[in-house]
Length: 302
Image (cartoon, rainbow, N blue to C red):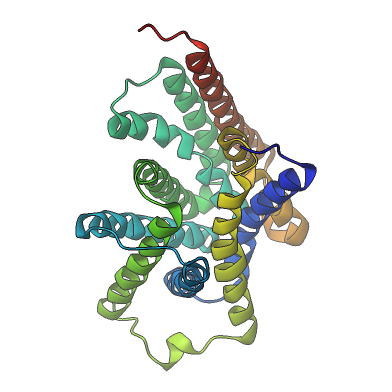
């Protein structure tokens, strides 16, 4: 890994800012959550295909791998749908605070996929996360639908991240994402057709600003953000990247407070709960990094 420069760290924080800005776009787009995700994945898949052609990347994989990628694509589609619907049912602050609870789900999902024991401190962190969620729920009961959807979004996001963690051991990340986008579009297309929404004139007739926001969401917040994240990891350690991305809810909530003060101003109990959740996420990442460093320093017995 090459030495990171100031511009690399600035680029990383810009990518996290973009991730937080995704929630802002979700609030501004008038289309339903399912339509937003369909457009996002369809346009991002096209842009990713263009990128693949430019760099001349071989995307041939086995049928078994495509089936696995397709399952992950359905999961990420469900994550985005529940995330955007959480925003529409409540607000950005609720959706992002609940999204942060993914660390709690990871403490139980990761041991299953990676066949390791559940760590005691992860259980402790999980209990504090539950306390944070309880504080938010009890103070913002009017947003209960958004809270439930936000928790589901966090669960799908964690499941997707863990599955992708296994894929990345064998396959190129660009190839993985391309097939996931394609499968997500196919899944959503079938869902839209059989759910009664249908691809009719109304589906493709959106306000002009919706088109602008959707294009930004698909190009800058999805295709560019993915490519940028891969590029920045050439210079900055994976731990720093992961830890910085955990700041996404903070960036997003601050942005929401600045742009929509009339709907995003929450109770003090909400901010206490959100702070507890985000702190546990950051502490979990720091502890895992320290353990990884200690393992590397341990002498190997031949």
